[in-house]
Image (cartoon, one colour):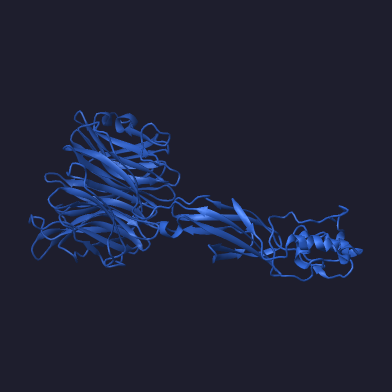
Length: 574
């Protein structure tokens, strides 16, 4: 798997000639010559006290015996096979400095299939003091000898088809040894389709509504309508996008996993998913039992087995979820505070991994004494610092015209639900703006939804609105209003490993129906990079409703086929 390159030395026959010279066979000189074949090469029969100063070896197997008699070279050479301190000859007393060596060079993974770190490991002689890592001949890192290097695989165009990685070690005397290894790379270019799967029609309709990454796999949740009952479905896809008949893929419906009798016959829709560091899955949504909404939270093991579930009280709903590094689960949703018409307050619940409940924390307009305006939580993003952002939408009253307007809202939390900040959008693009989704970003959090001036005007279409906020809820970039041919709404947001913002949106195009758009942007002014524009086979209503990004981006939604909505899930290179 790797090759070792020698620095320029004299050819091997020169060493053999050295053994036949009078200097090499004359008494103590014989011992000096027998110390190392390498040093015979270096000085053609000399004591090895001077030479090129550079050497290379394939490992620690340096000769320490007399090549003619087989006897050891004596106490003067006891360190030459370990790369230890210099020794001296018996006749001249001049130092012999063995070269360093390097061995067992390896790269993990052996083949780069995704953006991320490759770990370069090797063994070096004890006398080696420093090392360098070269990528195709260019030094990219240095450090103490023996310490692993991290080689960053950044993108397909840069790293494909592979990289020659070279480690050079150097001893205190300036002598070096080096070894190289070739790491092939099959990293996909951003936006490349990995797989797309349309589910079989096993109900009157089906649609995907939530998605999460599980390593390089995807987990998606959605619903099937079957015999008048809405069934929540949870699926894990393997690396080919298959969930049936595979070792990694599986599917199950809520009536099979739930232990709640009322859910056996009730309707359940799952709205959000999260996967923790150990592969446990958390799904949240809203159940409808006897015509009343009730929030639902379920935690599953990595194999899909139910660990526990919570069915909330009447008049609650759950729309977003995120899992903190300690396993704490944040759930975003709402509680109903008035019926006919319904009015809701934004609610955030927190659960420990063992089901202990905290909250909910209620966010509402304190001036709304008669419960006339609604606030709802839609999404959860766990930020790099460990804070949690909950994004949603609220109604505000304009005292100038006494009308209600929609505004995006973001709340930040620490610990087990301690609210530390809140932000309401300034409506600086259009009179209304709504937030449906959120994701962690380098700056803090990125949120997305739509903006619109007049919902009552059929000619005034919703347009995609993206905002970037710091963890202190300051806008760190100008908001981006993405203008499209027709009505458009962002339902999924993420960031890839290069820092770009990935948007999943449903866009109405050319009167032909809704289409799926997935694209990348950097900021308000950067060109849009289109990853996917999908108009389904029936030219019908095709929608993306959720997105989750890392190196890969998983997405899910629905595609209309022969007049029937069918669940669709896909994976692209982020």
